[in-house]
Amino acid sequence: MTTEPRVIRAPRGPQKTAKGWVQEAAKRMLMNNLDPEVAEHPENLVVYGGRGKAARNWEAFDHIVETLDRLENDETLLIQSGKPVAVLRTHEWAPRVLLANSNLVPHWANWETFDKLDQAGLMMYGQMTAGSWIYIGSQGIVQGTYETFASAGKKHFGGDLKGTITVTAGLGGMGGAQPLAVKLAGGVSINIEIDPTRIQKRLETRYLDEVADSLEDAIKKAEQYKAEGVARSIGVQGNAAELVPQLVDMNWTPDLVTDQTSAHDPMWGYIPVTAPDEDASKLRTEHPAEYKARAYEAMAKHVRAILELQKRGAVAFDYGNNLRQRAFEAGVENAFDYPGFVPAFIRDSFCEGRGPFRWVALSGDPEDIRATDQALLELFPEDERLQSWLTYAADQIAFQGLPARICWLGYKERDQAGKLFNQMVKDGRLKAPIVIGRDHLDAGSVASPYRETEAMKDGSDAVSDWPLLNFGVGIASGASWMSFHHGGGVGLGFSQHSGFVIVADGTEEAEQKLSRALVNDPGMGVVRHADAGYEHALDTAKERGIDLPSLGI
Ligand code: NAD
Image 1 (cartoon, helix red, strand yellow):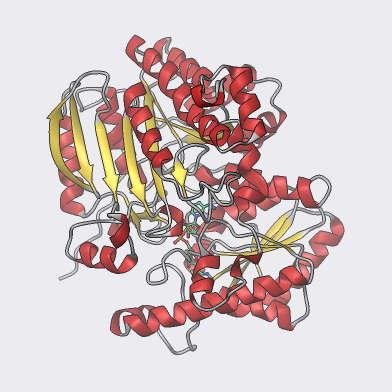
Image 2 (cartoon, protein in one colour; image 1 turned 135 degrees about the vertical axis):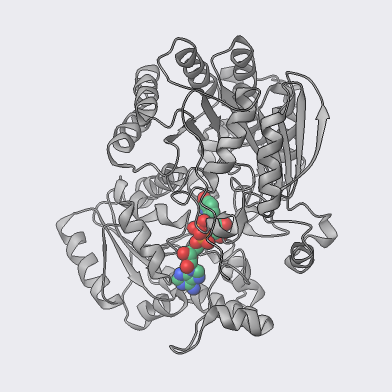
């Protein structure tokens, strides 16, 4: 007997069944993470990023929803790797939910230990925003991806990406943002993806413009658009470990090369090269060791080709999926010859506490997002990047699940936006409360030596006191739910990070929480980078008045 998969969709509108808007928000956001429009594999509770899940299993999901509906305004629900384990009496100013996902004692922090515990039903992989209930579909990463490609244009091509071709791979939950982001930055992109259903999904949601019949066809089209100065994205079906080396063999070099396949997870993420009559998932189930060895072999081949393209003049960078480390483990000694995207393009923003700020309309009404877009355009009239992004996003970005928006804001900006949204809920300009959150990929919330904290000025790349402090700061400052995760985008053993969410429900209490939490959370980015000796962060701290006793500021 086959059972129909469950279809989850968050309730919409101003009526709640929980005892407070924070609990209602947590419930709707958990459900929204599993909305088929939002999640990559909702039937398995997988939201994005290989096997990043929202709850450990369906039983745990049901218990979380029931508990959030009965949770009092002075209680806190504890979630351990996707399972609700306790309700504790706390107080009104405490978070309503605390989550810890995929954490292991460092000596055992590897996939082998995790997989055993996962199979025994004791853990789940939370990725970043999957297990902390603030994923908003591919839009969540679009602006960050745009910031990266726009900076690459500024740094290497004298402005934007007009007249350039980028080659990348992976059109999954996050990677699917790449074609749109490159286009926004003015460039042409060729996007390799092995799974035709992912290509189809990106076409349907307008993240990808067209599909080529073959690699040759993709290059021909891309060259034509490049010559015409047209910004356009092209998908091509195939395995990156075959097609990127083919570019080398064809002696064709793109202007930029990167990758966003799920290389962080050699077992469930990166797909090895298979023969035409071979079934990759069967191979994984029946011969896991061989599958993994072949995934590593493929990643080594892929990285060798990227290195060769770099040698031939392409700007190469790692896009936060740990592909270089996997290739290094498979014997590519110079895998780290090309940089990660954070030191290459993003660190300056982090020094200002600038990073991804996202919000979701619990009303479910797109008009609420339009009203907040307009309000932010008026609040920050001088910020040109923000003005052009919000104008573009309002026009071009298709919502997935509950209507949501993202933009990058810095220290002493996010609180202004949060308080404004709270006021708009209070005076009825918005039809229901707004959930505000961010990625764990932010200025002061993550330790990840091959990504966010790669090549720190003082060598403190692997110090994870910082995300732990960030987790504590959110709790102490009024966050609605806080999370602490391990692994995230780069896999087990390679990162620790903290998630932050706060609800603007129009109350005076929310106003106070927003004005502390949305200052202190991005403030941790300035503090972290000032402590590491970045001048730009020290200047920001001085200008905006952060008290840093060890630095005499
Ligand atoms: P996902 O699992 O949803 O998608 C990965 C995609 O890669 C899938 O569509 C898969 O079919 C495809 N793929 C796998 N192996 C392939 C191969 N050999 N050739 C071609 N296609 C292949 O993951 P996602 O959410 O898109 O994330 C992708 C990666 O980026 C992950 O490692 C994630 O941790 C990382 N990530 C980076 C950032 C960032 O800001 N840089 C942010 C989030 C996630």
